[in-house]
Image 1: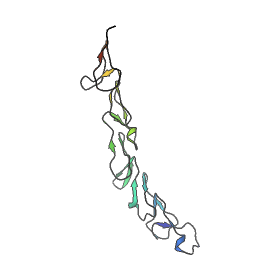
Image 2 (image 1 turned 90 degrees about the vertical axis):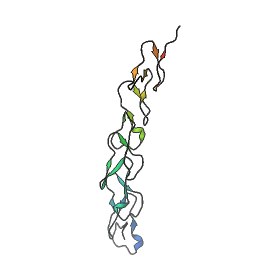
Image 3 (image 1 turned 90 degrees about the horizontal axis):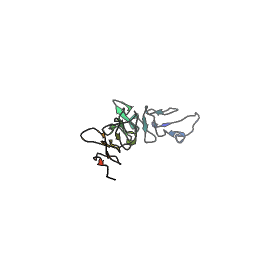
Image 4 (image 1 turned 120 degrees about the vertical axis):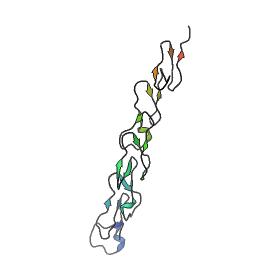
Length: 155
């Protein structure tokens, strides 16, 4: 039947037919092998009878009728046909990213951020306005974030 295959001849009962494994399907009877889901896709059920059971892997999204990798600056953590999510502002990821930790801060000097998190001013920098700038002479900041720099204490 559909969703099954038989690799050898000479079978003497329908019980000899095997279910298509996860990631494959068969939509016709009498086949010796099941078809693979398309690139970037898998079937989460055994004995799949059509490619409709195939779904895009994490890091891939549905584009028309096939799966394609999430583009640069995007990621997708779950399988399915949902769209890829954008990395936080100022960060980017390689194509096909499947975790938000693949998003890395890529702003110029003075910025830092946890993988998957937003970019912020690194230690020694402050965001007086929109951009992170170095603390002025005679001031410091020992942690990352948007806070202002502190004036150096007297001796």
